[in-house]
Figure 1 (cartoon, helix red, strand yellow):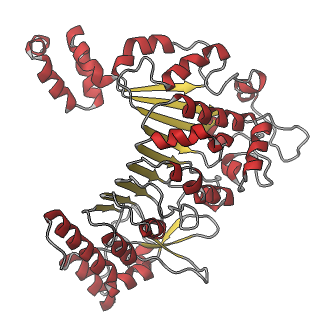
Figure 2 (cartoon, rainbow, N blue to C red; figure 1 turned 45 degrees about the vertical axis):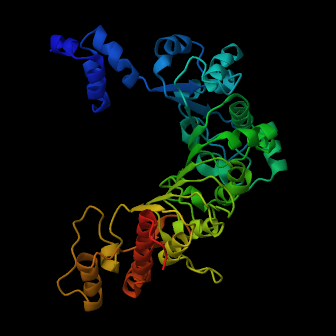
Figure 3 (cartoon, rainbow, N blue to C red; figure 1 turned 135 degrees about the horizontal axis):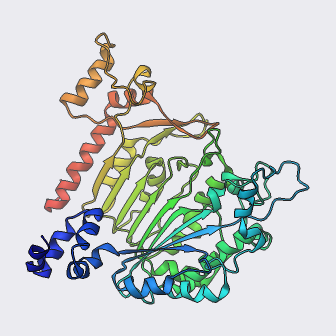
Length: 463
């Protein structure tokens, strides 16, 4: 087998490798040194660096050996809380001495967000500038509190809880942000992280995983605006969590208010972003009263990808700005949301398809994916997810007719939901699903959208 591989031209072996999974590539690389040399660029495309760097890190050796192949730099940045106040009755006592001993950051706190010792900070700052990574173009920042913020410690001075998702309980104005950065080492570290990225990185492609819903004072600087203005691609994966008893983070005002401000504190400065992706966490649904995409932002946007959010309500204001360069919209696990608020007007799927159809003159590719078929009856709605549910033979004729429309006429059930006011979870609204499928407006506007985009692609004049 080794001899056969050696006889293949390197170009052909590279093509074969492109079609293999990562494990198969690793196994193939073990054949011999020649094969490993050819396959190495396919194996080491990403570099993961845990920050703060430990004192015994081997980062220099890794970069020297594999840096030439790296396309994507992943910085996994962990933040640490202040020590619990023993005088506070609500603080949970540490029962596990071994666990307490593992919390070195209280006895020997890191000297930088990037490294435990300041002498090692330049190694990470060089990476942020892609030094030693000649092919790298993507900067991915993974942020998280140590042990997912679950330590009962001094994360925030809210009156709800000292751990978990409650670090983002309330909204913060800019004065409060500065006060928190002076009081909490982890908030200062978050500020320093964004400051160094803005001042050092030349990337045009930024990804933020577990994007923490807390502002930083450096976001008001000229350097931050300049950094955002140089981006071409931006992907945000917001933080999400539950409190262990079912409450999702989107029940907290501070979480929702942060994303309500996202357009003003971040997106309006990203004037050259061509591709934007926002993927909400399963435990952090983005509703119409949280994420706001203001009209007129992102003037160069071409491709928009949204996942797990109230797409019609969020997108309609943005589309009012008539984004002239938009050519692709990808929606996944998105829904239309009903609420009991007296002044709320339901934003239907029909209204979204109509708004997209009236946007610009260029063809816009629209894709939609949903993880299941939205229910049409209460029985279907409350069926076990693992159950192979089938409609009863004696189902009401009106519902049976709707199901025939889906099968025979290829009608689509566009999902309508409610958000549980207490827990923040997404709940299917079978009544609205059936009602809007029966009215037909959603599918009528969707077909009109598809017809209009086909006309634009073919260059046929509008009637």
